[in-house]
Amino acid sequence: MKLRLVFALAMIAVLSNPAYAYIDPGTGSLLLQGLLALIVGALATIKLYWKTISDVVARLFGRRQPSDRK
Image 1 (cartoon, rainbow, N blue to C red):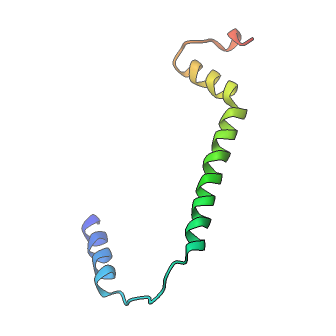
Image 2: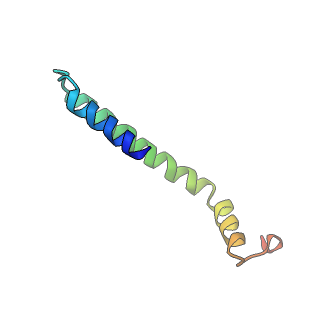
Image 3: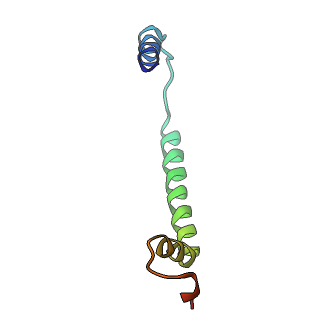
């Protein structure tokens, strides 16, 4: 199965026609902005739910019991 996939990808790469296209500078900045927004959003979500996340991790590793929560 893997050999067929590798062969198919190799054939697509070898037999593909040139696209005669380009990526303008605005596309790169848009991708960078989206990536930064994703990272900042993930960090904000982690900060918002940090207490819950840390309690779940502590319970998973047996450091705290559910009744120890203040």
